[in-house]
Amino acid sequence: MIRILYRELHYQIAKRNPLVVNDEKQFKKAIKNAMSLKRGLGVQAFGFIPFGLLMASTFVFTNDRLVLASLMVSLALLPFVFAMYVTAIQASYVLSIGLFKPLKPLPIRLGSKYLSGLLFLEVSPALGVILPSVFVIMAKYPLEGILALLWVFIGLFLGHMLGLAIVNFFALKVHQRAGKGHTLKSLVKAVFFLLFIGMFMAMNYLQYYIREHSEEVAKIIGKYFIAYPFSVASIFEPPRSAGLLMVYVAIIVPVYYLTLRAVWKKILEPSVVSEKMFVSKFKAKITNKILALTLKDFRMFVRKPAMLVAFLIPLYMVLPTIVDAFRKGQLSLLNVLVVLFMVGLFSVAGADAVLKVEGNVLELLKTLPIRKREFMLSKILSMTVVPITIGVLIVIFGARYDVDSLLLLPYAFMLPLISASITMLYLFRYTGEDIGIPELSWLHMIFMIIIVGIVFALIAAPLVFGLKHLFVSQEIALGILFILFIIAKKH
Image (tube, rainbow, N blue to C red; front, side, top):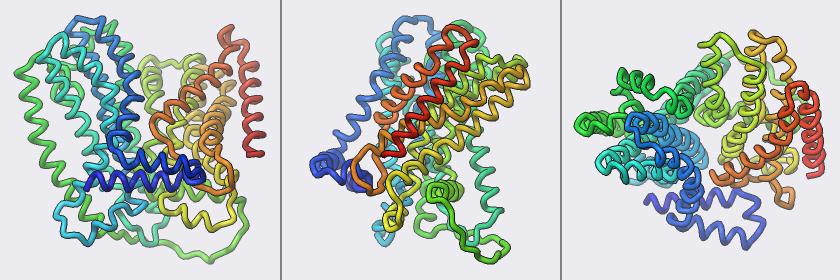
């Protein structure tokens, strides 16, 4: 059943991808890949392996058990966060296209196990990032390596379970007459969720700190050894580690079972939430198509706040710098500059949400007088609103410590726009005026981050010679943005 669902999901993705549909040869190839679990998952896993090997190089040249245990703590966050992110985003998309509608009338006691299995398959290629490091530990310390492997699967399963809980909490309710109260509640939930995830993502930067302060980190880990991912450090104490593993399994299994029951119950009979609202007189008005499409996206995000996870990736990346600034009581001009470039670079991840938010609405949009260029420009705007807001807030925050940070404000606008424009111009490069949802796999996303990174390197090149060349860098960014605008206008 899971294999059938996997094929159907990727068939639906291929059918919504105009790059594939408009080319018979590409469509047949896409269908062939969609029909094969091994081919589909293998290609993704292969794309993650180079990054896994890069991370594993640190473990190869380190024999200190204290350092290895500390490094594993930060690395163990990757499968946890990745599983939570993919589960939340992909589940919202799966439900929006009605993949499970045919299962509803079937006499299946726990149908959501198919949703869980399908999403777990989508998450599994992420193991290519962490397994090389685990195998290095296994080669040096066999028993400890096996325990590390078990903890990796615990983290993957824990993130997957939390992702399902998020879907259950955010994505499985029907709102009738949802007014401002519903919108405010959805935004508050999304903000709290982002802050929660950001807290975990910030810890990924511990690897740089661990090498120099492994003893200090070990003391912190010792205080919170029960909580994941600190519990991973127990691998060099096999009895305690095995006991903790059994405790985690004993807790996760029943919670996971209850979450599955709740998810499937709401799929069969979604909760209906009614709210009071003031009825205003309808007034028809003319609105720009691009702006209307952008507003439509954000209305849908408010209804599906689980999909807002993708927009928080830039926040994950800059959170350590912000936390460090609060701790030290200062944020230099250079730090603000680096943070703005990181926000712009990782805003590429927002493309995943702005494309998948359409779901089954795409067929309706195709009946409207919307051209591909207008659709693409609306997606660029949808991608940039959150990163631009984050960038502006960071500049304002930096101005508290150094008023010259206000000179960096143009970057807060230009860098996300450049990132989004490059990404969408690449994805919508197909011929014809049909609108669709271009495929954006993790390999595509990594490729786009590399391309955007090269462009950002060109923008930052004058800054190598000092911040006095700041305006030269901004002029280059403005020139690139103008060129991208011309290309988009003729697209």
